[in-house]
Length: 335
Image (cartoon, rainbow, N blue to C red; front, side, top):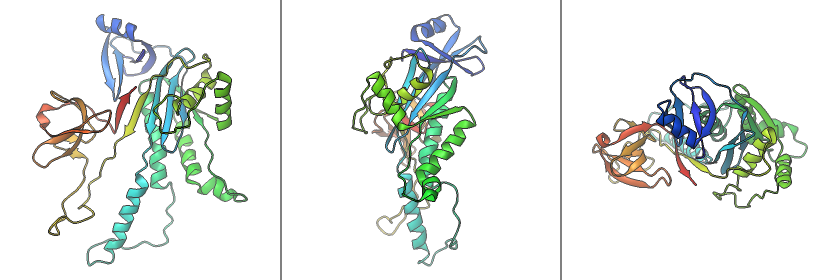
């Protein structure tokens, strides 16, 4: 990273500084190096406050991948592409089917509550839009964010059905919830999709058609254009380096697995702790380096996974050999 985030002595985000300047402050004993779930930063040991410029986050929502870009008028500090959590709907359906099946067996179950007014946001929709808010909250710990610029996506409309278009589309319900949460913390500004397209055309930028690509020009380019429309200062991206975030799929505790094992035995399944570590915790291991904690094998050992790919490295790591770095609910990869 060319520019590192800076925190004051009291933890307040200040303007980022160049990496060379950060090394100089650390060598002089005026700052210490810290780490925030994938992003290194420095914390000052003397200054408690400082003037900040306008730092903006551009957000390009998507169904499978999303883009975030943090920039000011003079510099682009961070470009992010995230994977959306798309497994919640399937898990809710599985839970519903298992619950309904229990009502046909001679086993304890809660009584059916028909004709309930569910209200609120569907779980799958809520997970997707809450993920965006989590990423914004994490960025606000690193940068003095003042404005959040979002591309105002539109749901597929039904001709002559105003009620559906405004109230019943999950997309419309989810984005309105997100906008309300953003306005509680930052200033919110919306641009339509055609305005983002026009900005790309004016700057001579292209957007590739492969939505699952890891390229800057898949999603982050739109996020950068959104931020640049607000801050100005650039006619082309000055930083196209990428950070990729992938949310972890944590298995909550179940009484037993869905299907019985051999002999009709149903083993306990799930949980979010492994031998004293929260699953997803980043640890440093003497052999495997920095990785994150997965499950446990029931014999006092834990599994470790690679941060960039999620691939399991070992199932036999001793908890005593692992040094806890931080807790995170996502894995990261740089490019």
